[in-house]
Amino acid sequence: MKKAIIYYSKTGNTESVVKKFENVDLLEVKSESNDPYQKKVNLTETPDIKGYEHIIFASPVHAFQNCRVMQAYLNQLEDLKGITIDTFVTHQFRFSWLGGLQALKQMRKTIESKGGEVRYHKSINWKSHKREQDIQEMIELY
Ligand SMILES: Cc1cc2nc3c(=O)[nH]c(=O)nc-3n(C[C@H](O)[C@H](O)[C@H](O)COP(=O)(O)O)c2cc1C
Image (cartoon, rainbow, N blue to C red; front, top):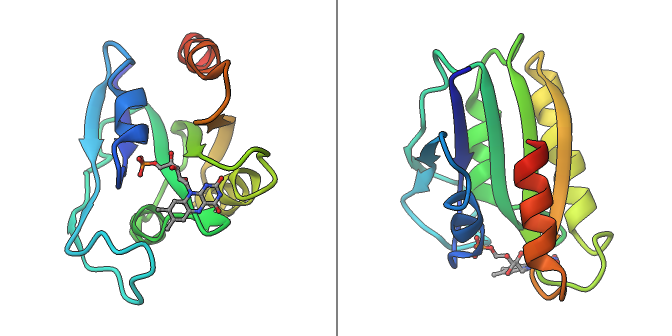
């Protein structure tokens, strides 16, 4: 099954996680600006999803939401029907309800609006002492 991780990472945490996956294409979303509060996002790299049967979308949480760059990327996608989709976010605050869950919910809503379905989702707490274990379990599941 052709598999890709489509990700955005501002400070490198999310990127360090996606690099732990094996046998998967890593496709980075890029924007003209990395300002987390940019009003209008101008995407400069929009990975092509054509041909992928399994896609993992990964991004950081910014201000209790999905980061704006990944959200802008998801918004411009057209059809996600028939693709196996998983998502994960990385975040810093102690509890996943301080942003992580909201970001995952926002991603799910956008994915569903394009006809897609999210199979698994996960928030990785960067401050957690069991971060590495959580990452490994996610990699095995996805
Ligand atoms: C502007 C900004 C806002 C953030 N807001 C949140 C937040 O609401 N909740 C949270 O848990 N972490 C928040 N964080 C922490 C990041 O989500 C966390 O450090 C993440 O792992 C960064 O991923 P990256 O290195 O891939 O960019 C924020 C970070 C930044 C820079």
